[in-house]
Image 1 (cartoon, one colour):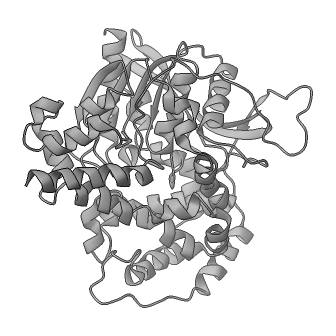
Image 2 (image 1 turned 90 degrees about the vertical axis):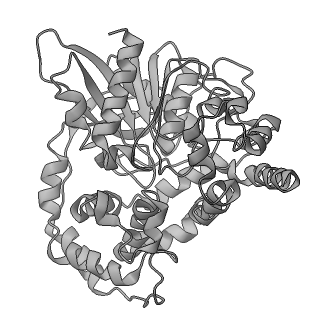
Length: 460
């Protein structure tokens, strides 16, 4: 049995080299910060001076835009699903027809735009790009402390993911509330796409620091999941003096090195010896074993990553032209990444956590802005070089850090693994339910955990 376990663990570490493309909790922290640098992502040469004005923005549409959408939907050609396939082969086309029918006949884009515009939105030009962001201030309440907080989304999400958590953070009767800034990553939704190659998470981190500085903030909290987790982590590495605290709901693991190998080998039987809790063992090994849960499952779910990390423009061409293709490609992630068990369901369990209107609003943000290809390119820019050689891969995170581990996240990272990367963990929470899209799925749970973390940092 021990030989078999050793082979399994060794295989896991070997496959970890491939998984590193997306799941990394960096080990080996040689430096304490990464240089800020500078960049220019607009067309042509960088001008001598930049326009730093911040101007209001509102989402708009036209009857022509909506009619074009309807015409494209009406011309969709479907493929019949395999019998009893559920979502195992991707988005089930039988259920897709129901979603598209709702989109075509019940969904009201103008009504959803009014919802999008209920929070103040702005744009400002940074490094040649018009960066879109929400800026939501809390109502004035006597005795309430207000702290600035940036929330950063990922793919295939948008700032709309935060619309359910925003009132919990800003309009609270608690002694603490937040002034929240939610930027759209350049190339996503309403933020302008880079015109030049190389815009990765480090560039996004620098741009978002400049945004906060332009808004008059010198110290602030950060929260992120998916790409937002990496971007905010980079922000903490880049300017730790500005980051009062970092809260993440996506924890990632490099799955590399003797320490990880040893913990995989021993952890199921002697968890205390490698710093695992019983909950860590349950989440890491479950009833199917480590390889099935953390290697094979991840390989099944990361085909998109290899496409977008290599040839995003090829695949992007199709989904940028077909609204139904775009919906199938993106909404499948909101099914599977919420709960792997949803793959066995014909409807993918989509309406268990989300409404179709909410899901389609996120799709429409990508469709109307034509931003799916530029959002996919973000993978290429981050994976085009060996990430082992990236400076942030060898830099620790020393700001106060709060980690919220949701049970249905793509991969579980025990606190003992996270410490190799995050050197100042104030809180580590085993969340009772929820998956990858924490703010969208479980806004109350995420808001409560974030609030408790900030109170610990602030000593409230």
